[in-house]
Length: 205
Image 1 (tube, rainbow, N blue to C red):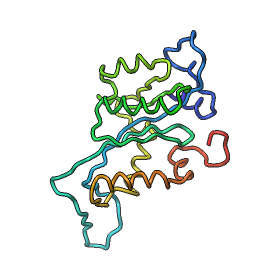
Image 2 (tube, rainbow, N blue to C red):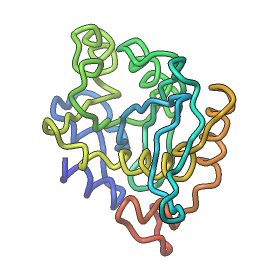
Image 3 (cartoon, rainbow, N blue to C red):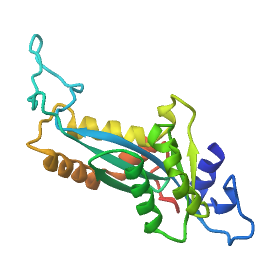
């Protein structure tokens, strides 16, 4: 994965870097994405905050009624571009739908998707989809229990800290709209800090 990451950083990643490369096919430029999903719960999580001594923070919640959406993301390294989709569930069907949408954004690009070993990512139910798109997509699985290696986890953490933690929403639509607005306002400097890259002038940024 580190080799893919370095090649993506300097803009020389291509379909030739695939593990199962087909030398009879034309070489395609490639992009690397960090893929993952996170839950958007109507019941807010309690995050770090400042309170007067002796006063406990109280956050309104919907009680036992806690509907949720699944936010899927593919974060392109190192450009900062990304595809984000919201679903009612996060099964292999939603994984496939998101990856298909990613493929459709740039049909002439070969995609390396870095992801964890969640059951919805490794299920044989995805085998036919992956086989059909083997010349356009390769999944790169991270070691087990290593969320720190998936850079999109840092994006989720910042999003929660600045948008959803300690914050009640009227309904899931309001919550989703708040998340969308946050993505639209995320500064380049903040993003580059998360990605561990410089925000100075670069052909890849």
